[in-house]
Length: 128
Image 1: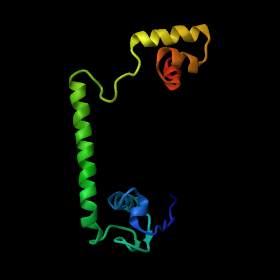
Image 2: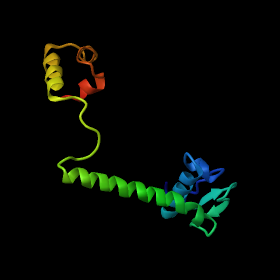
Image 3: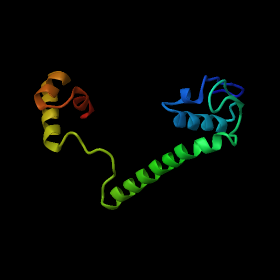
Image 4: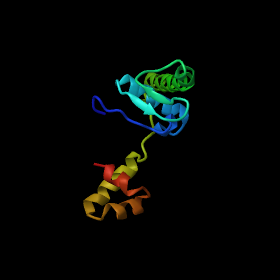
């Protein structure tokens, strides 16, 4: 968005997958200083900031987003305390990695290697 832009959406729920998500996006646009025109729905009007009408509607999604962030950070901190780093584990173990690299040195295509080792071609490409 550029300064002076004024996005127009039919209803706030068009800004996201649901009305609460759309209201969060609307709030973020206000934070960027954008004036947003919404002809219909709960947020109808031309606004540059939150209003008393929108505050109660925005509270539950903001609380949910805050809870997600808090639990994610807590999980990552817990993983770090036990020597991990969070996230999904490796798809390819040391044995499969060696097999992929050995086959790659022989020259077949990544698709052929993937079929032989039992992984996707994308996994083969990721092994360097």
